[in-house]
Image (tube, rainbow, N blue to C red; front, side, top):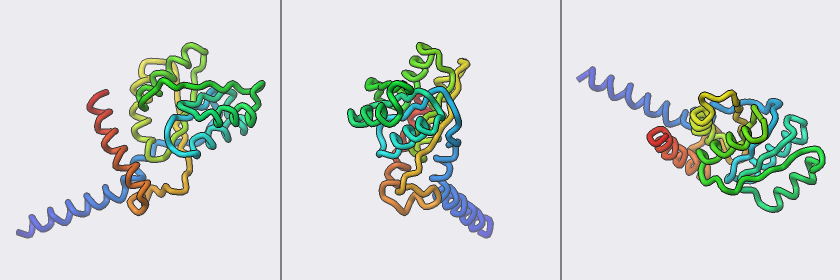
Length: 183
């Protein structure tokens, strides 16, 4: 009986530790915004992705910006703020998933002679992106780094306390399981 009780408490402790750490686990793979050749702003999300990518260009971290599923206003703002004569702004409207985004970016990089990219997305998206991009770039000389936005709604240790964070984490867990199974 004592061993069952001990097993119960260890199991409960493990479950609670995993539950409360989910936000940190999902966002752990993010790095810092280092200099690179191309900044890729992934589609979806809020305005933070675009703002982070644009800021990297303005700080001279890269000379080219690839926007996936951008709004027309974002393209205009990127060209005005970054200097259309100094910085290339490209768009991709054909990708429909994170996997597609990585595949199409790899093809774009090969086509344009780019070897290093910084990929911008939201913190809870980082683990799935690390899995995806490492699989897509395996066996190539291409490299990537992941840069997380800093949205006001996200707290890695309190992800469960915010509705938007809860939904994002739940969605990422399902998508990550699917990606590991499918790819």
